[in-house]
Length: 244
Image (cartoon, rainbow, N blue to C red; front, side, top):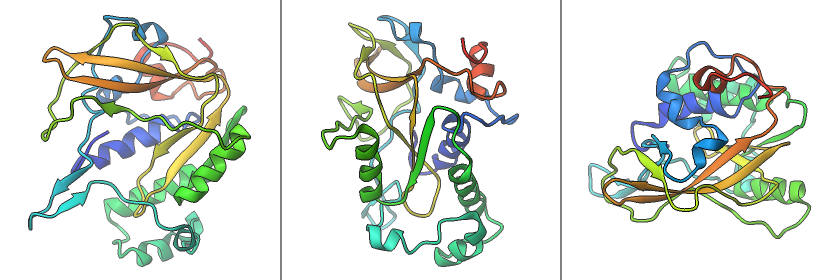
């Protein structure tokens, strides 16, 4: 979902995407590509997912390759961070973030999202280390035999181009009847908002652009949205109601 200079857009997706109990009047039509209906995964369907691809690294001014995303801290270091809204001032000081900056505002929002109570049928957890993320997923599946799936670019380019795609042969393929989804959040170090939501199914969707560029995309379909806030951006953009 982006790259250098695009991460603020990710934060708007995070606030509107994984927090299904929220109602945000500031959602933008630009978020429309993130939402779709199950029938949109049929072969030949057009999907404007041009913001799904990002470079994993970029060249800095001195020629070095720099990661475009924060990385996980080792568990011991991550657990030393006082991860709570009540400790926001200490967190900002720890990472040398100006209190009234946009970065501070996004950090505050991530803490608030993580502290918000789970919806009915949802189990949620904010993982501040790779070890804690794996522990949560294993506990939810009750097995260590898990499979990680991510959206991948089949023919990656050095420069990302904006494109529209069509669903390829076979359409969306159901991967499992149970999934734990982990969303990237805005925080000085890597923090993932993970949740197990009843009635959610993951699909692998082959996407093909006119120039032949291909993406294997992960799509999530929520089959029970009856407990979601009616003001959630997904309902506004798709023109549907909770539970439909």
